[in-house]
Amino acid sequence: MSFLIYLIIAALLVYFLRNKKTTVVGQSPLIPENFSTLLNEHIDYYQKLDDDKKILFKDLAIEFLENTRIEGVGVELNDLDKVFVAASAVIPIFGFPGWHYKNLTNVILYPNTFDHDFQFEGGERRILGMVGSGYMNGQMILSRAALERGFSKNNGKENTAIHEFVHLLDKADGSTDGIPEILMQHQPTIPWLKMIHEEMRNIQNGKSDINPYALTNEAEFLAVAAEYFFEKPDEFEKKHPELYDLMSQMFLQDPASE
Image (tube, rainbow, N blue to C red; front, side, top):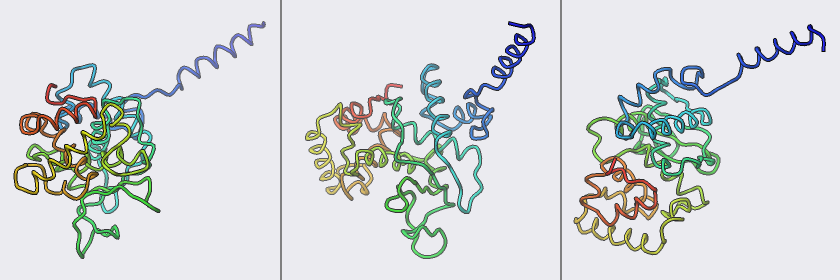
């Protein structure tokens, strides 16, 4: 082989190495340069993780942002919006690191509440978040105000974005019924449904601090209880130990012990 051919091969190798794409924070326009800092400053769930789990969480969040389009309607997106959405997506599936939201392509942020016609100005606007169906299938709409409130220091036990991502988990098996296949593979269905209905009766009788919106149906119970489970795990475990234990087995997570 001639010296010229060696030079050509060497030049191609250098070019390949210099241009090889890797997932590094700051190199992709989809990933904020201060991504790690924002996670540390604003995501309580992330702050409680050990170093190895923080690396995994960040990798999953980056993967989500690289595969899901986030856009604003009536709002200009900022880096913190991306962090909040990605964290909301990762938290419910952190016990299933190989799982992906195959039923989601877009997350759309509205300024505030909206109605069933997706209008965010005038009229009766009470919706904070929604997983799309029909022609909106594969899309999620979130109130940016609710998204921010869910990660504020005084958010209580509510987090709209986590609520909607749990609905997506539930919907992944084709039916939004409060019995998501991915979660129930480690947990018998009948005890779970029995506990849901028992706790619904407690809510009706004023004997539970779970948001009454959980009475809507089994799917909403799962999403509402998941908000509480992830946002205030210590309190949830103390007040609802049996429900906490079942949900720990379902999500393969024990957030109260972090």
